[in-house]
Image 1 (cartoon, one colour):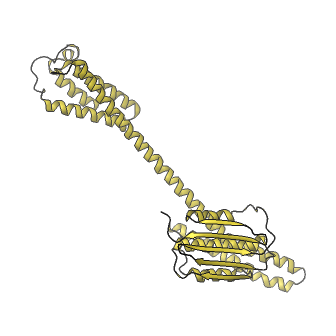
Image 2 (spheres, rainbow, N blue to C red):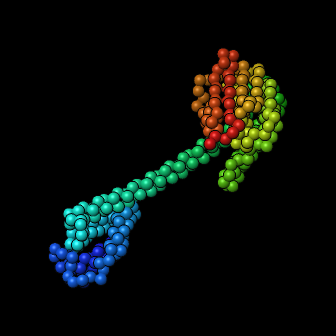
Image 3 (cartoon, rainbow, N blue to C red):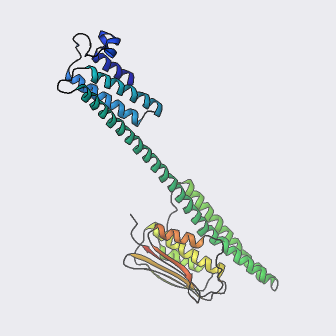
Length: 326
């Protein structure tokens, strides 16, 4: 394209009369030219600027540099040797150079804008992948670890009881097996979800699922659930997972707890939940990701989260907006 544009400029400058005259003679060329129409001059300028913009935008740096130098040189030469009317030669050359700078600058801006768009798209893709990994990590921790924790608690209890009563210890083994079956089912459900490239289906009856979760926790739980309306699926799933993780932490870290209160209710614009126990055994940090996962869930939904000691036990509380964050 650069060759075509430069050839066209030389043609209109006097190339038909000889290359040496077109380049070296200080004049408009030899003889009358059929290419001197002002419309062709305008088309020539537009073509040259378009080439400069395209070079600065799309061409590799080496090719773009060569094209820019060639077009600007030929354009400046043409502006110098042609008739200019009221415009001086220096003014015509200055105008050509100014237009060239504008065209190249425009092309460079377009190149930078496109590169920025590509980088932003790559960053968005990386962020989406990171969010997917975090979501899968939370699901693994909240679902599978919940069942595995139950298995460990029952197995340890069976070991303690076995020294005094083997029959009672054997009676605890079916619970361990059931926990393993539940963990396998949770893993299979997650694998099916990943294969289907979708989001795990949220509960359609959050109240019923919360009651089932509390009943299966084997903890002395007092439940207050007031959900008069159906919440959106991702919100319902997060409520269920936070309560599940809070109960799992109570079983794991506060085995001496004699009372747990689970409260889930609707306010005007949010779901308010709290899980509080009266257990005293609570390590400073167990190396797990339960609290981190709960806080991430709440933060992604635009809510507020707190977990900490109350002086008489441990409290987990969250406020989750009913409306999705824009």
